[in-house]
Image (cartoon, rainbow, N blue to C red; front, side, top):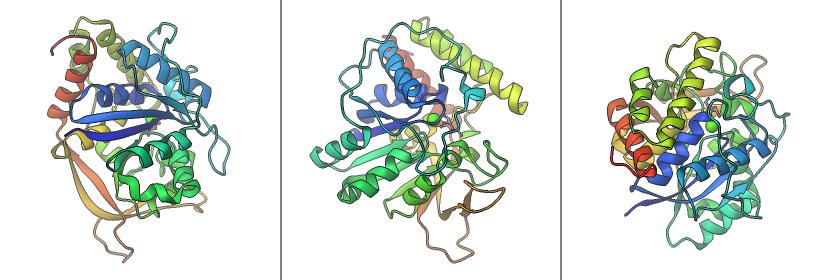
Length: 314
Ligand code: RIB
Ligand code: CA
């Protein structure tokens, strides 16, 4: 039986492919897409979610906009990474898929209570919507099967040397989520950097010979230019689909139990995920932390999903 999921995202190049994977792979049932401010402002991340769904022919999946700013600190977008539109690179047709007239947090809550079984939440963005859900609707926690998020890192950050973007953008929200007691898996930079979109991977998308395959290749080419310019990395890590892949087939992503604590007060480390991989400091285990990725099977699943959306068999 497919696992029911809701993806909470800030498209964002890697969010775009995460939406495609979640919509196309038969192992999951995408119940809704919710958006939040992060990579770009809420209006832009929401427009981009509509663009991706239009391109991919994803219909019947409600899209709802959520929070337009972090809980406490001001929003600082990643236009240096994702561009002014948040999805720079390819051109997108005018979206034909619209949003629903409901706040993301209310939509998630309504689905959680109505769905016959607990739902997995897959946040690939700052955790503002998820923190607000857990705070505004405490009864939602028991209806969540698991939170499988892209964010944090067992090592260095990318927004600061210590903090990863999704956590760093809204540390208070992340702290609420990691302290919530809801079963949680963290897919951080340490594992997503094993999902490198090499030119050979880009060629596989181009080789599909479909519009969506070409757009994915163009998204990855833009992402590659960013990572080369900002961090001297020749191949960009495709972060967000790794979280979806963990839900699709847990054998793709290896995890270990750990305590994860979000640093809120460090002058230079605010937003860091402090991961005790060996239960050394005695804080209780509150997360599964992803450490390994079967990259070959991950990319096979990713390319097959895009091929399916484009009406082809990979
Ligand atoms: O650090 C990577 C994360 O930040 C990804 O989710 C990317 O889309 C950005 O939101
Ligand atoms: Ca994202």
